[in-house]
Length: 100
Image (cartoon, rainbow, N blue to C red; front, side, top):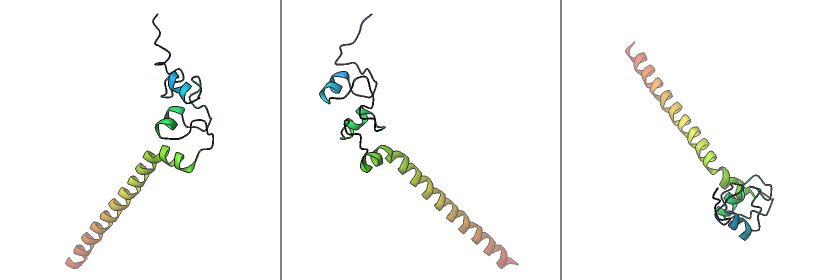
């Protein structure tokens, strides 16, 4: 059985190779060395400290940004659709009332 060189392995599958884990002083056997809920690989890729367990607000916002953007888009879309539907209904009702 062939095993990849340790520098290419990602034992904890957090996005950092074992060699990168060594370079960042993180654990190659723990995907979240500092236990803050963000994987070591994600923290390094986004410029955060994978050894600092304090989850900063900006770290949380960056991590959740796609969800936040999606929720805002859904709310705005729903508002626009509701407003448009309401205007169309009002216009139809107004035309119907003027014909009577």
